[in-house]
Amino acid sequence: MNNTFSDNSQIGVVSTFSELIHTNFQGDMNALCWHRNLEGDFKEIVVKLELKENITEVSAEDLLALQLSEKGNIAREIILNDLQLLTDFGALPSLNLLKNYERDDELDFISTDVYSYHIDRSPIGTDTFLCTYYGAASDIIPNNQVEQKILIPEIREKLKALHDGPEAEFETFLKDYFFDLHYQPKPDAKPVNLGSGHLWRLAVDHPAQQVLPCVHRAPVENDGEYRLLLIC
Image (cartoon, rainbow, N blue to C red; front, side):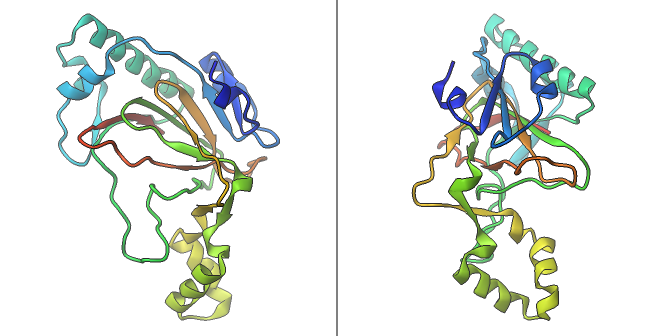
């Protein structure tokens, strides 16, 4: 068992998919990890898939069409099983072959892309599920080790200048443009890398949520390496 996960109060570690979906978030715990050491050659799948855009969604049919070695086939069966488990649960999983996400560099003082630490928000009760099968993996960070970017004075002043409207509408402006979802790590912050092969469930900000939403970010990709990511 990875001590980084099991010794961290933010993370609950489980050993089955059933536990992953039925364990309640509570206290500081807003991330659940189905801890797995996967067999199979996921790199072979990545090499044989065709990247059509920077983010290419891969269907079950695309996977089944690949001619794979025995180890590649083991990896494919794992992915197909994960997709089926999440679909049966009622989620809408997407398997993505990733070169990179779009960068948000429009403003030099605040970023709102997925490489910035952020939370997910939904109007209905839901969770974020993700698993990195190959390539760089995402990070999460404890809520007490980050500061909401819109509360940092110099950023807030620049956002007010950008808004250039009535004070009463400023908070709505921050939400409309998703500025309020993004966080800055404190100097002593200790992010946790989610690693490869583990299926994660992260708490989302929604009206019935009992815990703080999980702050996370996409990784900077390794040079010349695609990522294979399941997410929903």
